[in-house]
Structure formats: C-alpha cells, structure tokens
Length: 494
Ligand code: CS2
Image (cartoon, rainbow, N blue to C red; front, side, top):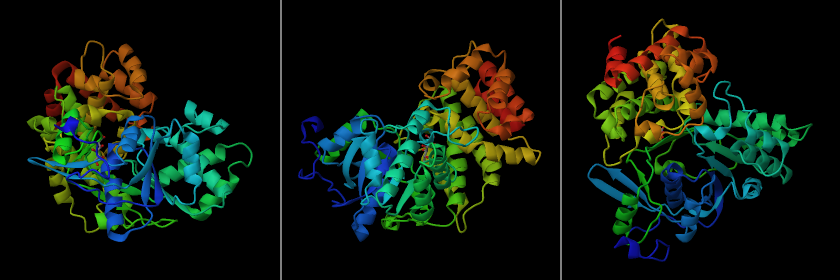
C-alpha cells in the first residue's frame, strides 16, 4: 500500500502534519545524517512552534546525495519515528528549508557561513569529521584534505570549511555567529574553536589574521552534550512509516524515546528557544559531556565489541546476554562512574538504570557494527582519562582494558582468529594499519604494545602504561583462544 501512496509533501494530507513551516533560515547544519534529523531538528521545531524566529535549517550532507535528494523530493519533510517496545509514534519536524551536498558545493558552504542571515552553524560530522590527531588532539597536518584546504581552493574538510567560511564572513562585515558542535567529543565547543584557530594560524603570512580577530570579537563556540540513540534506518521502517502516514516517506529516522541536550548559553548571534523542546542551558556542560561520553558511550563500546564477538548483531541482543550485562554494569559502576563529576542536582542513579532500559530497547534494533564503527577515534574520547585515573590510584581498569581488547579483536584480529561478520561490518579508518600490525604480532601483548605503546592510538598518557598495555594484550589472547565469556570472567573476577 505504502509504495503507491503519494510522496510526503506539505500539501498531502498525511496523518501527521509538519510541526512548523519556517520562513527564514538562521541555521546552517553540517552533517545531515539521522542523528541531526532526530535531535537538533526536533528541538528546533519545538522552539519555532513555541516562540517563532527565523531559525529554519539549511542542511548540508557531507558526501552522499541520498538524503538531500529525498528532502528536495519531499518538500524538506521526513518523519521521526519514536520507537519504544510496543509503540511507534511519528512527528514531522518540517524545519528544513533547503539541503545540498557539501562535497559537491564546497564554495556554497563557505558562502552560507558568510551570509549574515545565518547566525548559527550546528555540526554533527561524527568524531571522525574534525581532522585532528587522536594522539595529539591537534589539527592533523598530515591529513591530505587538511593540507589541500590550507593550500587554497574549495575546502573539503569540515574545519577547513568553517575556517574559510568565517574568513569570508569577517571580510563581509563580520556579523556575529555561533558554531555549535553536537558531536560526542569532550569539550566539543572548545575543541572545535581550537582546531579552527589552528587552521587559521597555519595559513601563509597574515592571511588568517582578520578572521582570528573576528573570532576574538564576534564568534562563539558553545559546548553541548547531545544524547539520543538513533540507529540507521531500514527498509522495514520505510514501509511501516509510509503505512502509518498514508504518504511515502523515503527517509524516516528511527529514534528511541529518550532525548537530552545540554548546552552552554553563549550565542553570539542569538538562538532558538530550544528549551521549549526540553534542552537544558547550563554552565556545567563539561560535566554532562563527560558523564555521557563515559557512562553511555564508553559502556556502549564495550557492549558493541563483546556483543559482535559473541555473534550477535544488535545492542539489545548483546545486553541480553548475562555475561555482557554483568561486564557493562561493572565497567559503568566501578570504572566510569568514579571518574565523573555529576552535574549539580542530576540523578545519576536514575540515568544509569535508564541506560540499561535504553540499551535493551529491542524494537530499535541498534546494530553492534554501527556502535563499533570508528573505534579508533571514538575510544579516544571514551577511555583514556578514566583508565589513567584508575591507574594513578593504583587500580587496574580491567573492563576498560577488556573494551580495548574487544575492539582490537574485532578490527585487528591475530592470525587464525575470525571475529565474525558483525566485527567485519565495522568500518574504521585505522583498520588497515592495525590489521598490518596484527598480522605480524605473535600474541596479544605484542599487538597491544604496538598499538597503544608505539602508535599511541589512545594518546600519550596510556602509551606509557605498560601494565595496562599488558593487561589488554592478555585479554586479547583470552578472547581469541578461549572466547568472550572467559575474558569477561577473567576481567570481572580480577
Ligand atoms: C554510540 C552513539 O555509535 C556510538 O558510538 O555510542 O552513537 C550513541 O548511540 C549516542 O551517542 C547516544 O546519544
């Protein structure tokens, strides 16, 4: 039925009406993936509905045409399907006013950032999209795209596009603007500002000077913590949503009911009333981010790697295995929680018990391979600080070591070990390099020493922690010789 239904458009009498019909576009969003469409877009629609404002969103997809094309075909509409066990509800935010592909029109990204009508640039380009070296945390000057962007021409990296866009905006009068990172990076605002400044400093002569002065004067980089589990969409969801709507939606986004956004209230050019959608404005964003990146994302990584290695395809299946659930509870309570400062008035116990319900949401079907993707960059955000804190106190963070052992077993298995198809489906920019190390390593310790000790994949701090590196190595051997459950038993009983 759904395939014959009319395409979702403003004029079609779909069951769900779009929440808003913005006139002006004050936001440029880089990274038009599912997460943005189920998170910032929904908050922005709530803000426009409650308080109005010229805050329509122009969406920029990094490379792929599919979302931008579908948005054009659907009057920039799509549905967000909130999926709980036993119920699915739909909203159509309706907050986008245009969409295009950044890789095809990089000059347009620059021009949009320079346009005084745009007052906020929001970003969901993933941890991988910031062109920094995980080991040094600085702009990666060895990265070919960054080097090309520094030489001139149309910028291809996100940091290059931001820097060139801000340069053009400074030259065009320098109207105030905010750059709001919504990625799972610690201190994401400060981090983004640092990388943009490093890019501008690298420009020849005094080419970056005017933009740097503009940054000092009229550009803010608030930090924000974002939280909502948003899996990749499926053909099954497309059919279900189209049936519910009575109109064909090719790009619905599945999302869990839980959603949270904590934002630092430093907006140089104004902002939507995001609090209308439930966003929290706070000076404690750092604490929210740290808490979320470690408790949720850190534990998520453990569940994903151990789950994939146990042969299961989804997070709810993985957390349904008793041994993985006990490992997740142990890493959360014993290794992540002691390392975080809880935001004032925040009920961490309630947040933690809700986490287990969220992971168990089987209707959502979040894939272990999706969470396990890009571990080389994601783990750098999640594990070193809590691990180093424990080591400083004379304790071995066994379950963080197990997370790393799980990651390396998935991405860089030792000769003769098959981590299975869910691990094979994880993409990672470091995969080839790490697989090369694994091919010549005689055992887990040798592999861990090369990756953590020599390559410093998780930063300099962990790179010199030999006891931790050996523990990771031993757990790799246990996983690959005796299986995941034996490794969990070893790590939880140590
Ligand atoms: C996940 C996150 O893929 C991952 O690494 O941990 O995408 C997670 O689902 C979100 O951060 C939840 O807010």
